[in-house]
Image (cartoon, rainbow, N blue to C red; front, side, top):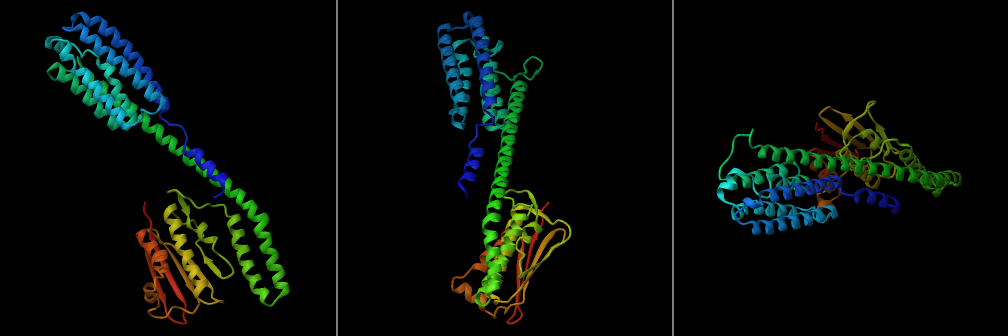
Length: 386
């Protein structure tokens, strides 16, 4: 592949993390929650049984918050291990309420780090793991809070911690998943754009160079005659095949997009290969269509190599609704009984791998009908999945 196309593809695949704006917003929330936690701690410090220990633990809270903000903003913290570590630290600080406060105080108040600050773990998990991970982390934070209180408060009107945590995990997780999905679609569009541009460039080069040379060889070869006439015929076939490729408006798709099978097969038409195609489009999954076209190409290669110098091939495409069938028939010398088994025994597995294997991997079938002197006929069929 030309270096220019490789460069374009690299640009689209190495782009920035699509969730970066969300991580930045999360760190702003972290800053505000730290300010709130500081105000709350100042207000309740005198009520704690061990105020000095409480301030030491609060210093840990601030230091960990700063480390998380730095790691997430720089990007190296956006990985599962770091997010899980944040959850462990948050739960640990929440459980430390039993160390710095009495059981009665814990029963009547939220944990000393405040559940608002603890929500940072839920938000980070939602950004890293999506809505499911965010909501599960929210459940863990809520469970730690209820454990410290010593009872489960089912009165959501007075204690909406579980609702807030689940909502935060779901909303932020969905936003992160949407951002990643949109980024993937943008990458795909950029790759297709690069492929179209590169194909147009190659088409111009082929038209200005190779096609004109082949046309000249075909013309002069027929004029000279003799052995040069055969070369002229081959050059003419290749010229027509290349012109068909250059002028084709449909592209082979490397994605799961639906393509028209006729567009793929039409490019294989030549002086010795006749195509019989339906008048309407034959849509098929892009990957399946590419494999079917490759199997047809292998069958036609076998015709050119083994059917005889004057053999012609006839290709029939049929859309049967729930399946697509391609028949490739030639008027060559045919295949002697046992020859295919003999070829496999000698290590020649082109037919079994390139044709039969391809169709079987697609859930389809490949049937060969042949006898000496009566040519060969392949019937390739693939199912169409909705």
